Image 1: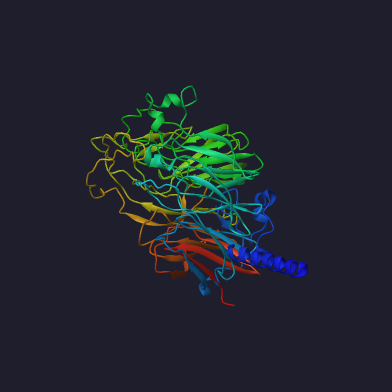
Image 2: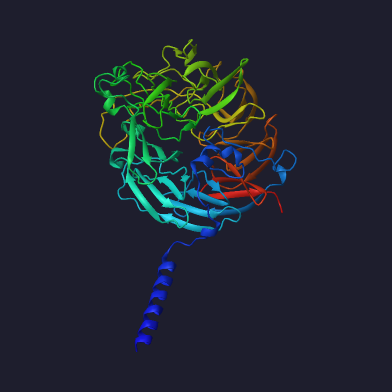
Length: 552
């Protein structure tokens, strides 16, 4: 009898284990990354087969050193696999690929691990929002970060989540902010050593911006840096009265990092109210429309550079900052490159924030140049006002936007998508109400471009940082501020386009080499990786991710 009971208990135990295993997310732990160390992230350029960061590397170059795809064979690219995200309309995500596994996000609250070679799903994590702001905008998630065996992602209800990279199970969740005040997290976190750095949205809601660092193991907050200085802090006097409370300054786009200088570089968005400047006064409204250099250990500011003081155009500076060591004007320099929504292409010394150069990369008529410190010499009547500005270039969407530019160490050029059009900037009073948009935009019909103004246009450009001048210009039929580019070691630049084409261009000449129509609007940036010696290019289009490679 005792033997039968023992046998029965053992059988029950095995059955229980089997049931519990069946309830776990499907997976292939043997095929998962054994663990992504900070050292691997720091030296990610040594592993071009992997795409470990949102920008491709810490330096924000969004460049793939893979060389299998060339000018001569890129025309043979074919779709190898695709995967559709249910319940989404237009993805803005960019996947990571590490050791043959793709980690990618969608919305709402979904993260997938896929076999990067075939698109086969390994596991799926789905999180339901705890609260939803009825006034929310931009319901997107643009990517994840990985450290060790953990995947980190932000949520639309402003939480930071850690997921087991092998099983897809939730490990911890930390509430970062209150989404009912307009906050959310839409972009990929950045890993620095043992910290997860994450920025916050809320600029359209007047919610005071900040950047946070969290302990990757526990989810506990280590530090917070507010982008809008409070009373007694440097820059608070650039805000009239207590307008700093609703000064916005979101820090939502993923930043860049220099491990040698141990410095974070993060951009700051628009002031609040967005168009109406009357409440915040005539000051610079620091640190909006700026890049700030921060100590990642303490969150202390090292330096800042402001691109557009007292902005009344929504020229949010949330665009990539590219960190490059190169010869520039005859000297070896540690440079920071940034193409801003205000239509100016900036070169800074990233060791101290010193202004080196600034040149228009699209037509602009709001400034007559930059002074020796890089401050714009603004033309009267170009900023927002109740009476309205003249037809100002660039428009509210800016000359470029948040999707990826790219820098090629082979050509030494920067590539970006641009949009060239003008707009009237009319303001009207906008009472602040927490959790609702705080814009202050008046209405008025824009006149036709004048004889000296260009017609609206859009495309992909190559810029020479040495001169700031355009090297080549590939025109697109539809303008968009949501498409990115990627240069590669094979001499090809891949570009996403609004009409749904993934385009391959010659990096040296801008000549069109190939295109593929996906049938859906693209609002994302392409990326590249390799598995078993085969190079792939992936991009989100509509509600799906498409993966391309040469024929076998």
